Length: 160
Image 1 (cartoon, rainbow, N blue to C red):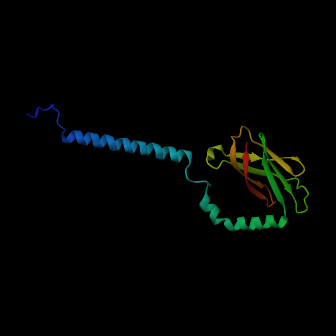
Image 2: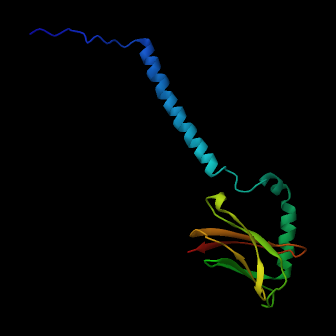
């Protein structure tokens, strides 16, 4: 038997290899650029704005927490379908009235869903802020009293 030695007419040359290599790595770089851009747009890697400055001011945070502990106040929070609620009681269990509370409702994975809250006193010691169309899941409620009252609250809540 004799082997067929006919050629198909196509020969791989150096420029063919170059085009394939450039196309291959071009696709890899394009996909990586897409993934990096998407990752940075959905979560920039910075959970707290100006975290360096906040670290420098941490001694003031410690002093404020000590002043709050001296008050002996306790607070509880809850989420309903329409609003966030905070109840503040003094050391003897009496409602604390007249606070001006502001805060944020923070989503743990998506900062774009964070919401600023302004609370209004709906009855003695109970403060409420609207939470329109809040998606289900875990949320971090951070609230503080405006003015000279050293009161802050941060708690994890579930919305169903």
